[in-house]
Image (cartoon, rainbow, N blue to C red):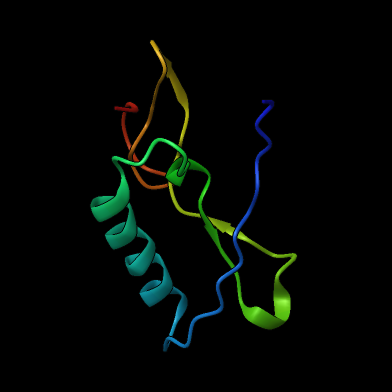
Length: 79
């Protein structure tokens, strides 16, 4: 069977983008072991402006199937 990529849209009620990012970080920490979830590609957007998404992690490819786990725009080398 050929697998396709899907995006889940799950509206949330939170006070700010920072809270949305914190929730994605918590979800990655608790569900990061599930190989079907690609948290490196996670973005957040306002419900009424879904075309303007903010990436959360750098996600640069590091080789050997690894990706950078640091926040987008981080200082220093990827890890």
